[in-house]
Length: 121
Image 1 (tube, one colour):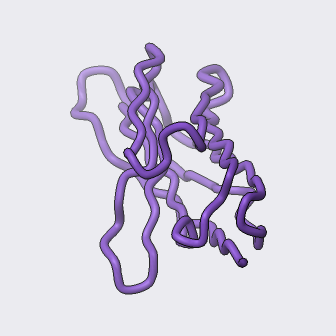
Image 2 (cartoon, rainbow, N blue to C red):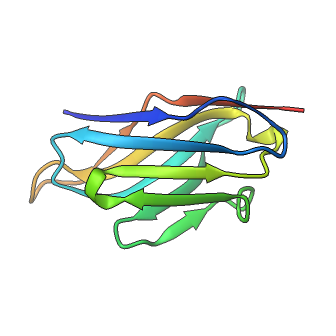
């Protein structure tokens, strides 16, 4: 079984910063990519940022220049540094991993339970 556990969600003021982290544990052979998605009330879940094991990074346009994703491959951990926070960044942030539990089996998608980020004025 695989678990993704997120940390770091909190209340922050607009213009402030937060740092999220997520660690994957369990039966993991290889992680292709890890990343962050978010879901605001009444909206669909959307991509925030992803990073592959090789270091290829993708950001949503709405967070480019403000958020930085990084990863510790050895520790199966992904981070999201969020600066210059805006009210519209308020959402539940979910950690995501695309991984192999064994050699030779199809990759699987796994999700964390989410951590709340609230940005106030």
